[in-house]
Length: 290
Image (cartoon, rainbow, N blue to C red; front, top):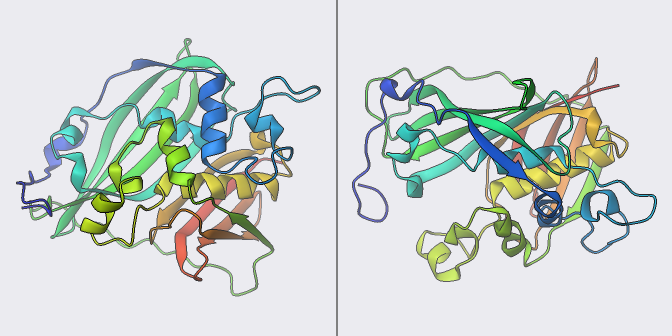
């Protein structure tokens, strides 16, 4: 049974390969600007990131925050995933890879497929890769998420191994502090995720939280902006990939600090910490083009 007293279906290895099929998705300037504002662009300093938030400022070209790909990927789900009941999903990890920057408006064909299912006993980890291609079938980018499904484990599948990750012992090479707003989750949810856990105080407290929590992908978007501002020197096209694991929820209005370590050949490591010094995104990796 799940936390609401409803039965939970067990995951199975038969889920691997379940696909939404390639489906047409469209986006426009309003979508990308609303997303940018939802992840904090321009808030408190509206003239700073006009390239993400306006389409008609003189001398400024509207560009897309690379993590916007997660919004497109969330529009589809493989059929087998839908059968598990999304109320029991916890977003565990997220990564995006882009072969080129998304245009401010456009279309593509998106296919979401389950590529791995792990049995963790009290739950299951399901990995879903969303692949976006253009009209000529050329790759635009991929979004990969891993979710933990409570109560869906115990089906006898592989458990999976632990990945080795170690931050450098030295102090971070770059450290950037960002302030979220109390209404941040209300802004972000307008891009598509209307889960009441992020907006309804009674719903959130009934599930053990102090109040509505910020979407994990909103925190992820803040980290993306931090990488663009620092190691990408303001150019979103240089961010070719980023990924990380969600460790603890963040509350809207909290401060986020992203610490970044430069490695070799354009690779960086990062983590994002909340205002209480607790790591919210761990095991962060990114690839920066020269």
